[in-house]
Length: 627
Image (tube, rainbow, N blue to C red):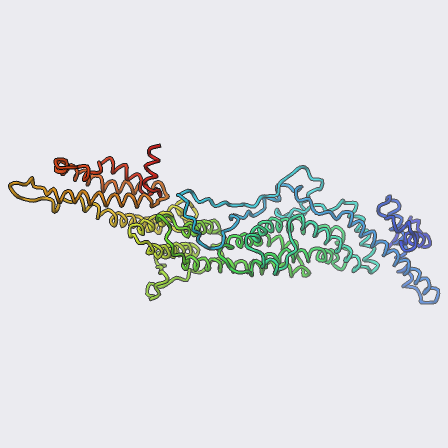
């Protein structure tokens, strides 16, 4: 290290300055910091250090006589005192600028690069509740797109775009004059052979600052075991916080720490900048990634799929930035860990989709839902696959194989079959979605058999398949993946169920309105058996009353479907009853107590049909109409 020719500091003066600032020998030196003083004093001390180091180099080149040896010992002592002092000064400057990053001061440009999670807080554990009170209201899936970092006021820090990558936003972690002071100290410590001490001091102080930033960002110190022991509801909330924090950590915090290391240490030899950077952030980076790693190897429950995909997409989106920030051999473990976690999250997502398919197929509830309304399983599954379609880009890349379905030639009646030849043009993910709907219908068909009333079983199938159709139509992404051909099959299926319901319920009622068996012959007869006719009216009344009483309690949640089925029933029943009543009314009214047999006018039947499929008792309908 060469001094300027005009440098006035002699060796004796330099030694005096060094000893004067020896904190072990002077109370004043112990309480005061050189770099807190004026610039002239700082420069004078640095010149003294340079003179001592220059003298040490000169002594090393001289002959080893006794005088030189004594001089060398003095110089080494002075160097040690100077390095101890510079280490203290180095630490003090670092500590004075060790505040956590101001997250609220970052501009909107940071949040504009964020990948927003698309899921709701989460699906609960895969189970069917006994809450059947929903009456056709829309299924609201509350998507909690992660809130971007808000821009609150002007920043006191300068935000600098250091590289050309749009996602990384480096901020100045300390003022430029402090950086210059730190670099001047580091240069002298490293040239004197105090590289390790310099790195240790830097790493310990800056790591504490990073830890403080972690706390501010909500990154907790959790081991892999800690994460895996958390309840899913708790973990679900932490995942959302982690996603936001991870983007800030990689793109702002770690990137800014790397830049600071480069500003202080770059060019000082022995890759000091990379060593200091890893000393500072390796522990925090591993801590950050361990959270995602713990989730990637946890139990594969279907309700975790969407948060797993959020984590996968976030890390995949961050990977180029991770590779840019953690470049070089010393940071290879961080890059490798991030890549491996992405791979494990992808595998976990594939496994969770398979688990979901098995759960839908095996869902065991046997208690029929009251009124034949939409089964909670149907709502759950259709909401689930609607969200799957929101992730079609990610899952389309992860799901590369067809579902493992049953075979049409298999004797296993516990699993449905699926003919893939009808879906040759569709992606593996689309086939999985169709397969989920197939096994959902298979399960629902099994549940319909638990109804004692066959008509109600058909109504249950109609309600649920119609709901499936409406959910597909309501999601353009899902409809595109399922395809119109399969949608037409589903539409035909609920219409067949509606026809089966009508046939099962109303054929026997309409049978009462037939002419067969009513006509008699004889000179004293009107041509109609009044006894048979009375019995026919009584049978009709009893049957209609029972159907009315029973099916008013049944529920069709969809208003349009409910109205369509009522109209269809009316088109069957009303013309037949009007015709029957028109032909035979006079035969009843000419006898005694006609009101006992003709209980309904056509208008009464039309009014009564309005009670059907509302989910209320007939008495409640009467009260509602009277209000």
